[in-house]
Image (cartoon, rainbow, N blue to C red; front, side, top):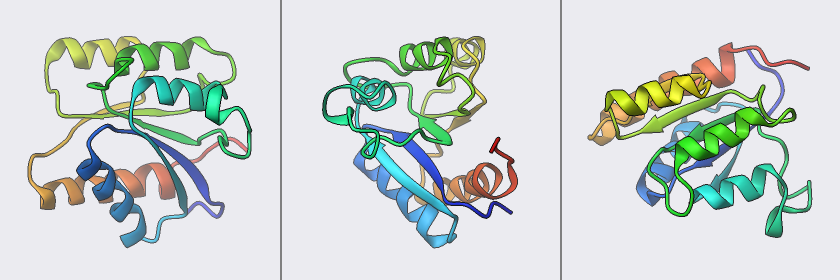
Length: 146
């Protein structure tokens, strides 16, 4: 199991989904610090330390990014492209967590080096179970470089 507290960047415009994610981390006592931004431009600002996120203390490099595709300002696939094109960010695992099960979205995510593609269930209980599994895999069992 991971011994250090990991930083997770959640890029999610739906407040209910963000809350389920936050609760999923807390209820499983997973060692993670959750940072949440609500649109694609804020995600890029956070990751590239621009604007309100220019201070590295306010924008620590995440160990994991949970990325919705349907985002205001900058679409999720464009955020993913920019992450994977940057030498400092490309090694960060990006899990696409979205409502879209459309083949073009799945192919687009994997073509742009997404680490995983998960479709959000529509009911709360199933979403909570999905996050429980996701949280344990990425935050407890997965190994990160030191």
